Amino acid sequence: MEASENAGSCERPTSATEPGSSPGRQLDETDRQILEWAGKLELESVDLREKADALLGLLQQRCSEVAASQQGLETWKQTVGAELSAFKADVVQALEEQRKAVAGEVRRAAGARRTPPPDMERFAGRIIKSFETRQQRWFKEFQATQDVLYNVTVQLDRATDVLGSVSRDLQALSARQAQTEAFLARHVHELGGSVLPSTPPPSMAPRQRASPPGPAARTRDKAHQTRYLIPWEDISDQEL
Image (cartoon, rainbow, N blue to C red; front, side, top):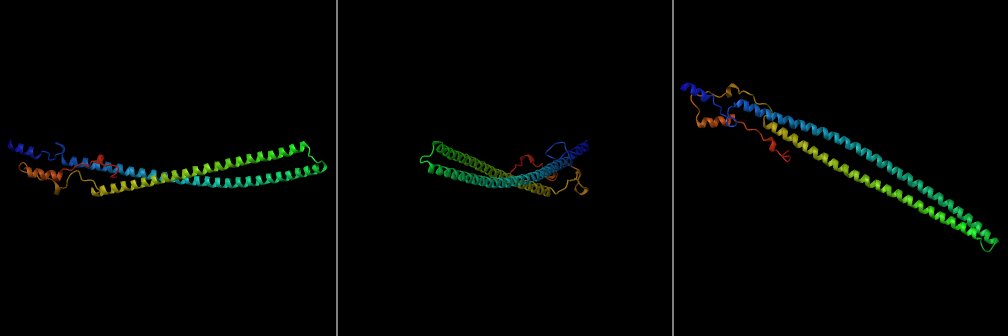
């Protein structure tokens, strides 16, 4: 009867974390959780790297498109400015020639008659007024074109600022990715980089005691066989 009680006390579990479970099962569960979190960190690192590459490619494409649009707008601005200047010069020259011709006719008519006819005065007034009206309209159109070009330039500057902000966010994402990889490598290195065996080797197998272990022996067994789980949920983003 005493022998059976001694055998039952020798088979009693020595772990303080889960009564009724063996140390080998506890080690297997710990290693499984470590490998599971290591795999999750590795997948997250790969996903972040792929997203960073895709965002960098998209950023380069958008920068190329903005640069091409800006170059096209500059060329269009120069072309429109040259055409408006040439058109304005041609109109001014034509009106000046017409004015000189009308003035010559008026002087010749005045030489024949001391007082010019009222119809000639009204004709000259209409020509001058038409010229002033057209000049004002052309000036307004030119001013509107300049305003449009200015607004386009402002929008391009804002787009450049947005692209700069996206670039800074990508740099921060790359830095966090590097920190995540360093964190993973550090913990894998601390854990030895390998899975602990489910059963200890013969040299580490616990010796069977002929008598029930005392308090000191139980404390020593707990220190050698108990392994605590790493609280991954408590790790904050700042630690990553």
